[in-house]
Length: 435
Image (cartoon, rainbow, N blue to C red; front, side):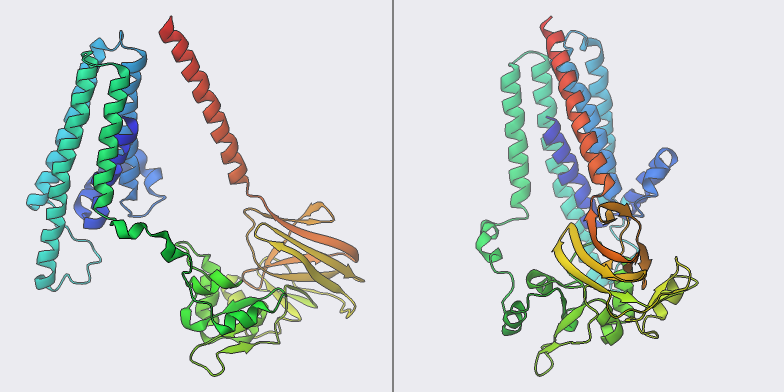
């Protein structure tokens, strides 16, 4: 019951509000909830996803309570079930009435970002289509919730057993999901063969595969948010809904115009440009996976740091808004080499004769990446606007970076504790019901 109600609340109602861009009801409901849940809303801007979560959680809590009363406290629920059903029924009637009123003119079915708002010949049929879609879902909403309440009522009156009740609820949930999914997916879309080769391998890709060193590949014509390059090679981009803003800034400031100094810093060895002949170019000036600098230069802020990247020799100088300016004794015998590279692990061998400063061509991310020098945890710094920097004492050492975010570890512990408490509570209630 809980699963089907939860799916119903998310799939039928609120996801449709995203499609219809019904700003009025979103704003109205936000005003009501902000008084008590302002902190939660401050995390999300204006996305109606908040309403999805809040109302899904609300319906889930109400139905969880009813489910608990029916199965574990049947003798104690006689005086409460009617009141609870009335509350849920009132909520359902008010909400459904609001939707119906919205389709009759209460909602404008427009947002603040309508590109065709000044073209009524486009907006009028578009608004009608949005209202028509809501009307269709309102009917499905009434039918589905009515079925759920009828099943609950007959089970409450002991017209059928618990097993029959669970089977009927499961059938209703499967039918609802099946009908809803068929609205968006056709049988032809379940052909997984089309994903076996999403991108075509080119001659340039084959040539790059022959190079076994550590480097990155850049395709300027595809921009930063492309998946083709990332599918075959290490690259600076790739598609994701959330991008590091520093990387985006670097792209906007320098990579769009293929600034040589910044591309060297990012270890971009190969550039694929289908508009040039030849289409593959090899850059021999890259600084590699890591390198030593002779000087640290302090900048007042991050803005000055990014603007100076093209004005200094990044092979000899590192910029930082966190560290003070400092000179290091140059020694051509100092060496640093990448030993191993995985998604969550990096290992370097270091052999230096004097204290020096190393820059790593990896993005600075202190919320999970930790650095260890010969097994002892150390601290690294943000340099060159987005890279990692580390001061290294003389001697032969091993430097490792490990990705181990605390939020994942703590979340795993909390999930485990939650499951343990759930089973303890379930066993206790089963024993109580038998007694």
